[in-house]
Length: 334
Ligand code: NAD
Ligand code: TDX
Image (cartoon, rainbow, N blue to C red; front, side):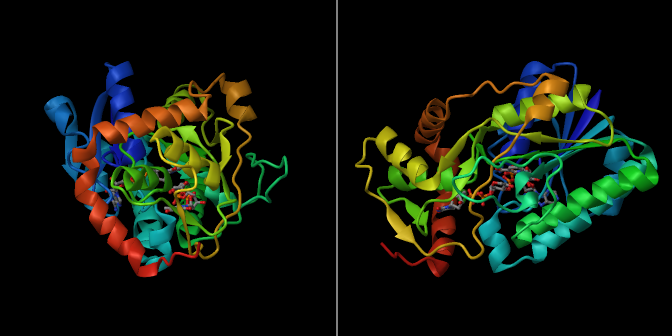
């Protein structure tokens, strides 16, 4: 069996490739990745010829046609993934997330190949703080940002191709991932690498926003569960009951790195900042029998802090560019 992993050099895609090579030796892996700013060539370098690597754009119809024609399964991670970037310039988000997904769908339709589409809980918008409300498969779409609206658009294209053309596709919407190989623009790696660089962590606004954290290996294990046992045409929500507010995340990182827990800055809030995400993953757990392995967020975070401490050569070349981009829009407010 050959699997085509789009965006396989990115954070979640690369962890998916690692998990697959580790646990599914019978699966041959092809990675297609445009190698945008978000892809670090070192991430999969150690695997050499153990994977087929193609540098290319998912919005390239001839390339997608060729790659899809010679695979059994497509797992589609490729996307522009960072909300803050989408607020500065949404164009690449529309191009990759919508036009790219459309291009891939047309290739999948032509060749009758199975697709698993990776998406986010942000398509549902946000939830109020301090309630028990959680997203389910029945929650209506209500995205807030250019990023989440283009992901919502890509989900709707997949669903329409299932209904109108009968393609064999499944979808998943997952909550916030953390773990190794995440780009330093994202919240957790940004704060860990700030502290490791002697810089104070930067918390948006009041820091009361809540995210539902899941370890990237749990996300990818759930993706394989859906590929193995999911029903064609269906959507599954993936979450590990890891709700935590941003201030607590920053304080835990500071504590794990031996710093005072008030040694952070509050900076200008993100425009349209979603308040809270929370996933009800009952369907995935009861129908498909999936369970997360990383149920203690603090110990998963501690292992992630250790990973960044031990892999400075991987993240350091990206750090200055990210921080100078943030410096253009961010002002310390407290
Ligand atoms: P990432 O930004 O780390 O990686 C994205 C990868 O896609 C990069 O390697 C990039 O080079 C590649 N890419 C971008 N445009 C491309 C194009 N046009 N053609 C081919 N490759 C292209 O993102 P991530 O955090 O690994 O997210 C992967 C997927 O998971 C995305 O679809 C995202 O929406 C979804 N997701 C992410 C999270 C999260 O917490 N990070 C949560 C839920 C869902
Ligand atoms: O420096 C920061 N300070 C801060 O307070 C950054 C970068 C973020 N934040 C806040 C904003 C959010 O409330 O931390 C929270 C997490 O921010 P991000 O890491 O940017 O993630 P988020 O916007 O929640 O989206 C992530 O999860 C869902 C991924 O980037 C998406 O790809 C995924 O779909």
